[in-house]
Image (cartoon, rainbow, N blue to C red; front, side, top):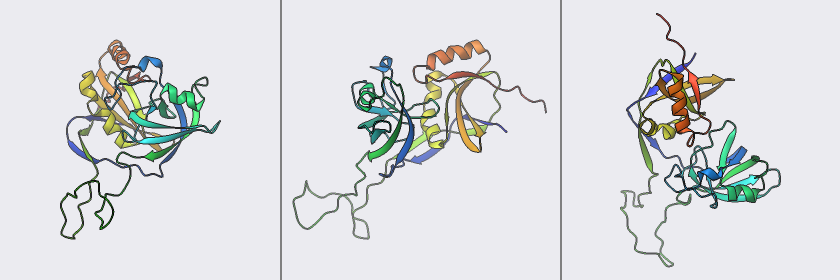
Length: 250
């Protein structure tokens, strides 16, 4: 059974999940085409193929990761500053210079291992005042009743989203398919406003696994859907037109 939901308005808090140092992911890496030079990344930076950066679907921005080419064992460290890749089976998109150092520019893709080296904030415990040694400055911060400093809280993010079951008709533009709901929230935040469309999320099951398919819609004609597809290709290169099922008569 197919379930589709339309995203509208509800306050949904998501505590930013700090990735552990033990994060390891294996899969296919690709690299950016030169046409993306000078464009804005998902975190607002200007992309440059000469910088050691990368796109990942879920790791927090400014996470440092070590990427190892399994074929030649070469490794590089890159900083996450964008979202993607959205092509099925790929786990990370690298800048051209990073892909070149890993030695797979000619092949186009490579089997890699991705390991978190450092998360934003450094994954270090909060500093504690000590009786000896030099200090970088005066100690500040409130003291709790227990006598210790209040630990710094992880950054909290809020997204305005509401989901209700919905039966679309006509045509849509699928922009991505994900396993994690967290990725859906981040992707859909602001997406509908940019393209003037509703955001539709289909819950699908493939080989026993749940997937969330994100689409823009709905459109009365295929021609209109194809026009929107062309408009989103720069951000979602694998976007394609889909046809929604006809409403069943009750």
